[in-house]
Length: 360
Ligand SMILES: *Cc1c(COP(=O)(O)O)cnc(C)c1O
Image 1 (cartoon, rainbow, N blue to C red):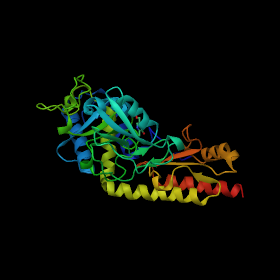
Image 2 (cartoon, rainbow, N blue to C red):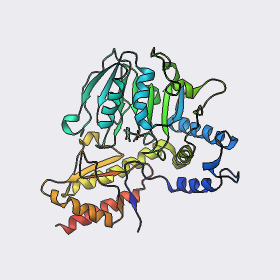
Image 3 (tube, helix red, strand yellow):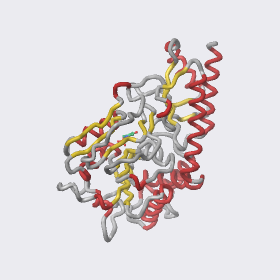
Image 4 (tube, rainbow, N blue to C red):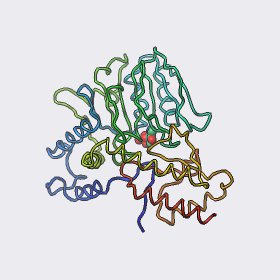
């Protein structure tokens, strides 16, 4: 039976990327040697690295004064690398979920942290509004998409201080005005590739000003390098993960880039939210205006709570994979990233409708 993959991360990838990855494991770039077994100093690999950076620059329209880095350690490592590199005395954080909270926790190792607003009071089901960003902060940190709770900051906000964003779970889902940010980071495994590679987009002139000595690997400048450029190859990069990211972004570009992704993502999300709002058995958990295009969270409607495990089993029978909600929210979460085809969303909607009929 066809499986519909709604996992939150790692998650569905374009089948074209998977096919190229399988082929590259057997034979990379007609070398007769597989990608898992080549040196990262071979010319074929250096070309893939350069092309991957170029794909990022083209898709997101990244200006030349920004570096694009591919590192290890996941977004969680950036939680401390960001303040290590950028915080002089104080930073401001918007607490929209546990990832944001964890980011703020690591920043406290480097100085004062002001939480400008938090939605923890309502299980992070909304994005706080009307807060004031302190102008004495070195930067303001946001999490643009809150993977666990299904909320999203839909615009590139204005900030009086440097804006830093964890875009782990919505990067490449819509066009972004990169110029508004000092730094953007995230793990690749939600929307741009498999686990193992972390992206960092950073404006170069903000580096080297925090006034502290940094370990070589922690200092972003190490990975940028001058001549010869390190190009994220100061140490061994996560070769295979970057390769699959390269293939994934090639697919995004061939489909028409981020405008097209945004159009598709809006359509998929609308389809599913419309069904949640229409179907008397289900109810969404996130504030409507803050609903994420990537992670759609819903629970059984009041009075129907007892049907939760029955729906879970029914959906599984119909081929739905990974729709169990995070334990802190409960219910269901369908992650409908770029590579999730609209057919999967239609299948989930049909499944919800059939379940409704069974319980009329
Ligand atoms: C998954 C996720 C993280 C954690 O990423 P790792 O790569 O596992 O460290 C951080 N922030 C957000 C928004 C996430 O979705």
